[in-house]
Amino acid sequence: MSRFQDRAWHSTVSISAATSSLVQNLEREERAGLYTALKELESLKGRVASSGDNLQNALLLYDKVQVLFYRHYAYLYLRNAVNTQ
Image (cartoon, rainbow, N blue to C red; front, side, top):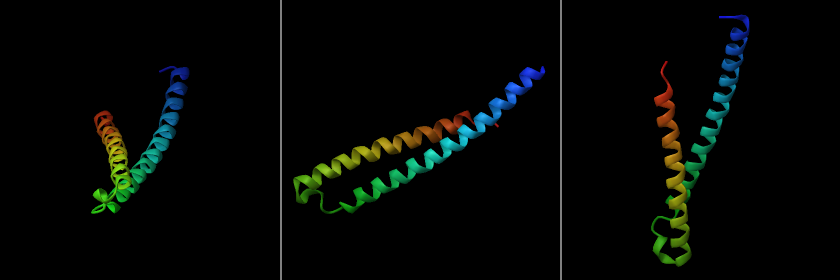
């Protein structure tokens, strides 16, 4: 490996490590958002049919939870699939 290739490789490794750290922090924040939305949805338990506003709020929260869950699921699945170490 030439000196230039060696420097480029080390730069890539350090950028990759920094990016990985940022992505993991973002994933934790997204997961916290998912848990918050789940708790909000759970708080409507038993009251969904009592009013139209509650029903609409429950449906919107349900959609939000679905999006957040599948985004999180896809990230974890892909992270595992790419992890070849």
